Image (cartoon, rainbow over all chains, first blue to last red; front, side):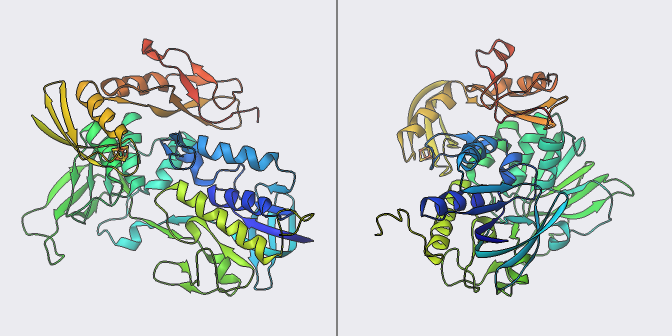
Length: 330
Length: 120
Ligand code: SF4
């Protein structure tokens, strides 16, 4: 099957790219989403803080996603295929995707990767200790609580002060979990100052800067963590260690772009941060293959993802030789 | 008395230096826009927050329905309001923006659905 433009990922980046490509004259857009609904990570980001730039109004993640999903669904030129997972992509833009009951092969005129990112894990920052249950990436815990409806534990310590960790400190507190501390190795919190204020200060949750979890204890389940102050030279300050009893540790230490498909297509990826090697915003080293949103670089704000991803839609339209009004060529 | 807080009204997160006499607001500096001044006054007199949380559903296509209060509520009642929401269950389809519970805890705000939930 031939398709003009295929977009992989139906989160804020993929939706913005699809709408912008249509506005720029692309007639046929296939939007592939592996989940059962559009919206991507925004569906689990139930807190407010989205849309201040784009809509001049403070929305929650699901509300922000819903506005774009409505526009996408109303557009007859965008076919949305849910539960669709791309398993193969090559440099000539031939791809295969699995959807319930079928494996579909497509030859695309252009492809935009809007595959987002995944979380760094405990292993990537090496927290010493045992390997008990109860250690979760913060974003996974967010999905458990906000989408699946279970709580990860009863008493939690959060390693790292990324925005997701801060948001989860408040979220767990509101669900009745006792959040005992957020531990950050750097001298400054890594999330937004407003999240420190409204997620930690509002609830009296202590933030230990220049500290790290130096040991996770527990046989089957986490029983406590040891926290130590980190000296200038990076080692633990002698005598600074103390224990915090908890059954849960959330790890919030940043995100890495997900670019397996780009690699599969022969595109160059910068190993340091897993971003595409690129001559400009949203470009990859493969002609006709674009990347946008968190797959291109990790963004702080969904509003910026929307703005930059619209550019990817326009770049793809230009590559395809589309023009917004075919009757009156510009 | 001087107090330094972070404005949460937008992602810039300005550091607000507030001059206040107990709960009586006197002045503020450090705000990059007028919303910051308004926030500083409110934060001194009676801090307010919008509650966002989830409601359990039964028989619908999503398990947890994200919800928010239609307006801000007193910060000190946030935990109580979240606990009240934990006791609710939604069993009929709702549209985004639909009222899930009217006048939550008598606070004068409604609990509103942030996305649709339908039959599976
Ligand atoms: S003072 Fe204005 S610019 Fe600064 S954080 Fe508050 S709302 Fe944003």
